[in-house]
Length: 316
Image 1 (spheres, helix red, strand yellow):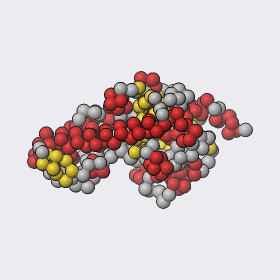
Image 2 (cartoon, rainbow, N blue to C red):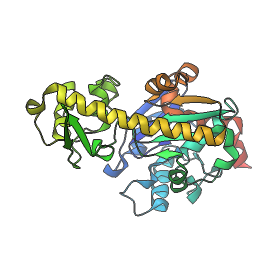
Image 3 (cartoon, rainbow, N blue to C red):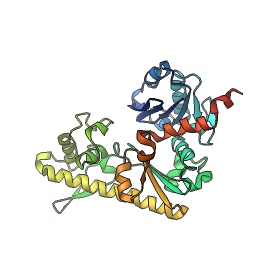
Image 4 (cartoon, one colour):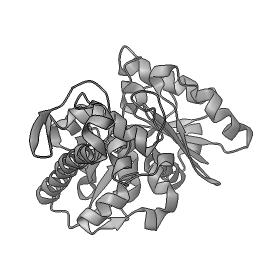
């Protein structure tokens, strides 16, 4: 069986051979079927699927996005089953399929870690999921999760630096930042050594190289400067101050949800897991799940489908 997570920017696959992450931005006419066909040809099916890419602005609404994704996946796996916000599997487009990938992760993990908060920080978003309140999670939309603080729209790669900081101190001088999309969180994390260039898996803001020097040049533009004007030290200051704000935002919200839910454990997954495992002194799911922790919803929907015999039930 193959597990598939169709996000707005990445298509993640977990099969018997391992974990496969494809940069596949839906707003650029993503070739979902073409990417998945080699897996189908290799006999990786049946396919259990979750999605969050239906929100991409190339669609007029979520219903259109869901239909597009279902059709594209079924172009490679005609018998695919799709996990929904009702914690059930479906064989056709229904509104419940919208943004159900995080619930699949919770469904898989809540019996393994019944008293935990799951922090899953990816390229674009951060999920903060009280696994000890699983029954109360079923049916929550992304709007409701934003309102409850279970979803933060900040991630390790694709967050515009200017969304979190309005000014920086450059050698002690308060300096407002430009709100143009000059630099991304990936630039800050690359400069700080939190990620390597090979983990910079999304497009850069200027569509140029993914090197330390290029990232520092993009960070300099945040304050309307060339790198030569502020120097490498100035670029590092911008990166550090962005990280301070991002880290504090995420950590404070995790603590708030842990207090309100009564959870006694924190577990972390996603590309940001190593950083936040250190911050909280907690369990990094990579140690438990291996590389699949970076594609947790794809792994989760696969395992949930297996445990429920989802495909045999749908045939009845």
